[in-house]
Image 1 (cartoon, rainbow, N blue to C red):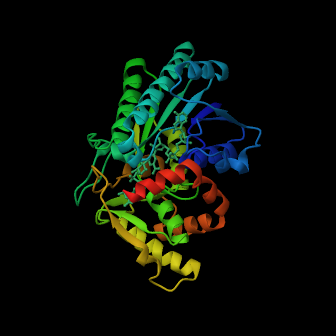
Image 2: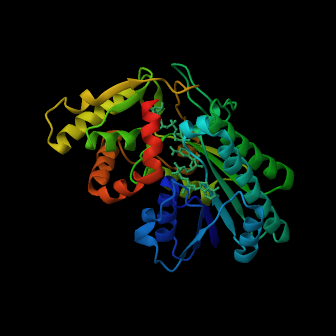
Length: 349
Ligand code: NAD
Ligand code: DAU
């Protein structure tokens, strides 16, 4: 089994690559990544020399390159995670999200279709990793199920919704063997520090302000990244073709409560008097089009395929903070250069 994993140098992709390389020594895993600001081969240091692992640098927007890669490797399956993933960047530069998330996905579907048509017994699965943000925003009650209508609000979620539609269209039109999952907010090691939790861990460490959009009342459903990777493994191997699974932690928190918990936890871990870090909380201008609440109903995944989250949030957050405090070099590297400038500018807004 030769599996192409796209975006494997990113946050979630690196956990999926690590899990598959270690758990399935008889699979050949090819990691294709453009290495944008969010892609970092340091995320995969521990497995880079494994005999069943290969890295290829390349852009999914380049159709010729993608077609040649598929012909050369004759992949049996694809797990597609490569994407522009940050909502704030999508507000500043929507086109980049259309290129990678929409056109890049269609390029991969076309290349997969060619292999599938040539020999349907050899190309067996196109697994598209998507997000709960395609479902839009919830009020105070209710949860997203697999049948919730799509209602994206940000350029990011609109681009992911579009890519999901293309995947379904290729399944229905060309019988391409496809599966989709839509997951809630992930957190954990190797999370790029532009996203809420790692940004605030880094800022607390450096005694910098913690920018909370609006009043901090928006709700997200947090899942430890290794639990997402395990869900992807279970779905990849067991889901019916053409099916969709929601993945989530049943773990809803307002942003302000997450950050207060983080502040208190890091007071303890850094030996600061209780209450010190909460003084860093700074309310800033809200994100445009900010979705109020996400909550995933993952009953189908739990019942059909027996998956469930393994960690309580407090435990996962504590593991995550420890990882960032122990991996200062990784944090310094990813917060230097171009990214640092971007993030200073964002905060000044
Ligand atoms: P990330 O931004 O950390 O990583 C994305 C990876 O894709 C990077 O390694 C980057 O270099 C690569 N990439 C970007 N453009 C590319 C291109 N044109 N060609 C090849 N590679 C390219 O993202 P993430 O948080 O790990 O998310 C991975 C996937 O999971 C995305 O599809 C995202 O929509 C989805 N998702 C993320 C979350 C979350 O909470 N982070 C939740 C649900 C779903
Ligand atoms: O729900 C899944 C999605 O979760 C993924 O599809 C996206 O790729 C991923 O980036 C994430 O999107 P969010 O926008 O929810 O994540 P982010 O970490 O950017 O923000 C989480 C919440 O915190 C959100 O309500 C906005 C808020 N926020 C974020 C930042 C960066 C702040 O209040 N301050 C900040 O500085």
